[in-house]
Length: 319
Ligand SMILES: Nc1ncnc2c1ncn2[C@@H]1O[C@H](COP(=O)(O)OP(=O)(O)OP(=O)(O)O)[C@@H](O)[C@H]1O
Image (tube, rainbow, N blue to C red; front, side, top):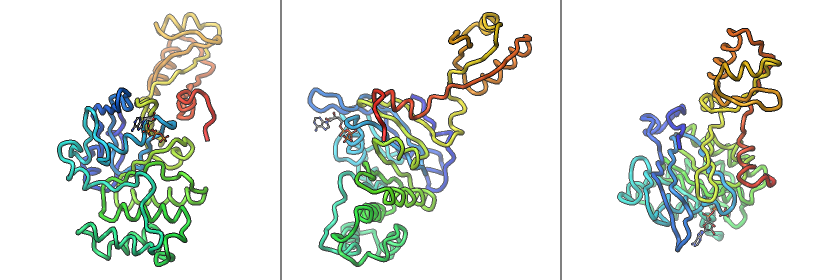
């Protein structure tokens, strides 16, 4: 599948400057027993973005993230993080990763600050000043010396992110981070993650089964279903200029003539339907006009992210 990584404008970090993907999935397969859970995942994640990994429950998101964080080995293929192979060069690859995979492990009887301190001690290269910096960055100053057991879920989640970014990873991986959060908590998390990409050039890889959330949170969304990549979708317009769309041309009575002029397309509801991209729409229109065929209307049938997601979830409700 073609990815859109090289079309994305990217700020910040070193791989952002070189335009190299921060994560490259190279034909990744995961089998457990006789079951194939991930089937040949090939995907580039551009640096400096919030990148969404969207799929219904059971589609393989957590399994993929477990492989990205070394909790599971791929059965075949490889994952490169900042150019380093997770299978051949694990230590170097993982040094660029911060992650919250299941619920963030925190000690409820300690303050948020003691939790961060405890974690920082396990990593030789985190100075105390960095703790203060992430606490400020994640908006936790006011309550950081209170026990974590008194925190809301949203605050715990932010403390989890603070912990995961202590060592300044280039890639932050979050598995369904908004689960259980109220709308305000979701919004705050979204804002902090956005800020993280902007200020530090960090790439945020975030999984979810909620389309509406992904649309608000992400620059790009990869859609996965039953272990297969279905599509990669840029959410800020410019990446879609090359997308092929079904386009309807209303040429009135001269529809047969228009069809033979193009030598392609089909007639549906007395309209000429052609699969083409943006540029193609302009060119076809020009050909009709030059041939003296009046064009009464043009309508591109955009297949939205929601259409695709509805298709893959069998038309079921999306939240
Ligand atoms: N250890 C395992 N043994 C057997 N099957 C597994 C194992 N782990 C996951 N699976 C199966 O692999 C599929 C993908 O699971 P995974 O947890 O990665 O999906 P997911 O997209 O994260 O879904 P959810 O949001 O429900 O966690 C599911 O069908 C699951 O039952």
